[in-house]
Length: 401
Image 1 (cartoon, rainbow, N blue to C red):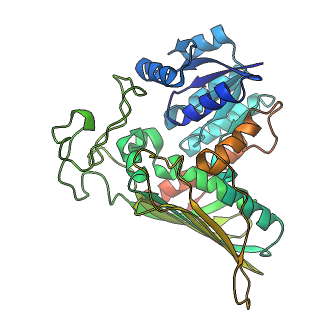
Image 2: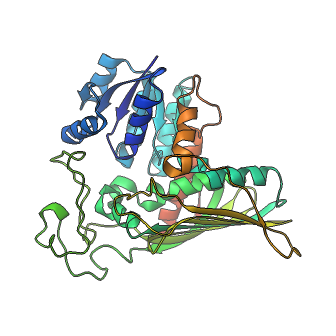
Image 3: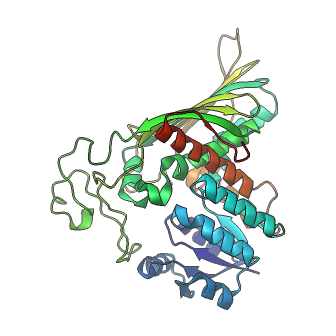
């Protein structure tokens, strides 16, 4: 029986807690929670009906619980610190994405892994486990379109999901370094996974267009729950008070705040080590949700769609909505494209959560899991986008360059 602790009682780790409690309780025991926000931690425990010790001190928790595994889901900028501290205590690590937020933290984590090569450590990039991504991977590895020449990846966040990032701490660069890291690291990991390569060069542009103080808006405040305009503002959001029982933080910050300093739209040209040229874009204020991936090879073209056209306002992260998914194979000279079959899973994120949990909590864990280095490569690409946008230049990605 492995003793597991959760560090950072955020929304994403609710899924981990549920899996540990309901599916993997015979092999893993959720032994404690740790968060610097006691109220938020109490809300998390109450929401999940957990009767476990609650800690605000990481070292004390580790000393008293002696965990075998720590799952890290804190505010992004603190991931690296807890990864390093856990590894140096010889405690296994599962880190939520993004693994960290910049190039410097990547080097710090690499060094911690070198000091502790025997300690289990992975990144929970679940997006590569979605049915469309898994199907594309099999088609590419089978040589279905020959040698890949180029890739196009377009990510759309609808006006429910997209707004959610600008109500939370994600919208402050000092905590997340932007959606280029917090959101897009999933996509960069998926691109690396599909192409069996890594990015070496990035040129990007972006801006804050739909949110923040300079975007067109009528009402402005600090938090929705105590805003003088809450009865008339069309962007009012009522957070779940049972879960966020906190005096420190509530996820209902004004989406028109002048403190918002990240981009809500950006695009990039990415060169991969294997010569593939890729284009990537993200829009956080689209009229529908999902992604489009087009892959051109020497003998064919794959066009994949994973889209949700109607959001439920109670399903901010599209966890339960069923997307419209398709993969078409085009061959030069063929009259009609071929529809590729997609094996779909059940549960959140198209079954991706269940799939990655089955590998994370296998005994022993599956060797196919996204590694710490996979997480580092996704962060290096995202950090390069941020630097390219800020410095208006092409940026080399790899730390050894």
